Image (tube, rainbow, N blue to C red):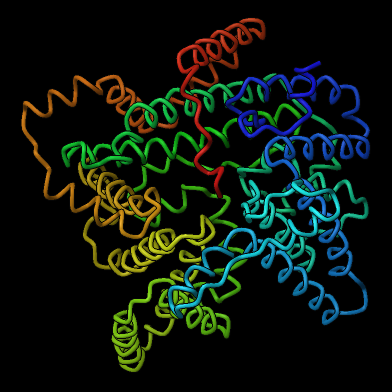
Length: 553
């Protein structure tokens, strides 16, 4: 009875995430019902919506009420956006929907961030009051909701799903769902609900009305994706983080500077293995139920430039920002009023959160340079618009990751790199050079830059990145004796990091051939290989479970 109570109650240490055994028991129970009802589309949508809401409750507790409320509101807004009375009427409902969704995201994710920045700038002492908690405690009893504003798990993801739904209806790429549960199923579908990939309405909703299909090859690939995802998460990401990265980054002064450099390269592998491991499992689990989620990563550390990296990394977020922000702003072809407004807002925002007066001098100098080039070089008009739209998109992408000055800086650094690369590739003698040595150098340089910027991504406080870099520079201490001590203490971790990068860099055709060899095995043998591999992985890291890195976003 106690175990049953645990299963149907919310406990922070017992979330239904993919690296927990309870999730796989939950998924097994879901599939037992699913195989009976999968041909009845409406019942299937109702069942999977209920299952997904339960999944979210186990992950976020009473925040499931917020998710349910957003479902009801956006379903009605979707009907309004598709209303037949005319474009102006439809546009009004779309604007209302965008404002409500973004206000909800800003309230829960950025209230403390903006309040603290405002207090710092103007010497005030305002406090954030969780009005939703006040109302909730009045309705459901005192203590039902904590007074502090907590960030709902996956709020960035399901907000973007809702925005995608409304915009796709307005663009007439899909019709508003007449059945509430079809729309709710799309938003809450548990494989992608809390950590993505971000699935656009136009890509997913049509699948709801298609018959279930799953052949042996697809089943084998789904098993392979789940096993690969578990290996990335449990063996690579968690072990490396627990036994090396967290130790170094939490106390960098305790280690020589070169260990700090190794830790950041290890972190690049960790965050990739962690996030891509989750999406691999999400894709595999979803495929077993007959639904396809788009690939979210394409070997990003094979990238030969920062532009190539952002085409390969978190592809669903990149595509969403491109289609719903970058292109509406004008893309790389023309400017818009939105470009001007967003530029002014972002410049003011950066000054607001940093308080650096020097930024205005930098902005003024860059503005003069841009105006001069604008007059002397006609083609620069297009380049300037492209540059501004790129910077805006990347800064918004950084802010999407979290309410932190460091995330904004991280986004701005990557945006600036994209801008510079667009000019450099016109001059570079190596851009189309197929020589393997040149390609290897470009891959290493790109990985090093991405790893460098992740110092701001990983360390939360504004002063920490510079302190970390200062320690690395002033206490590098590269000597054979020190290196041997570090190797002796962390050799297992270093072997795993090497294994992770080497397997990542293997030719894609080798990986595809390995999957095909597994797929050609008889199903009983596949099941035996899969079960044995999973058992070994869980035994190897039974005490090193960590939350997924993107759980906080």
